[in-house]
Image (cartoon, rainbow, N blue to C red; front, side):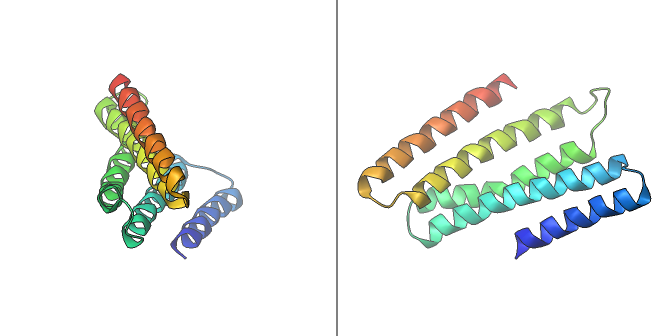
Length: 141
């Protein structure tokens, strides 16, 4: 229901921009913020589903708990964006948060989709590798 509401609001903003004949920076900021909300909300729901199914509860709580923090970092970078590079720290935090949340989303999704015990180990390994790749990438940012 929440994802549908986000998509509807994004469509209304885009429609208003087309009817108005102008797509302002604020319209773009709203659309990107809605996309970030959809991304972080999906990750939080994946984490809570993992907790609910009693599989890797700690990982589920970590992903569900960090999703709102990641949204805050991403929203800060979106709404304080300047071409001159004045908000470089906010941009680095936002990209790092997006990468780390992606690793958490990949790990939780893999564990949720793994049905057989042999696949659970493979899903855990994929999640660990995704976390390692995101951490190395975030260090490079």
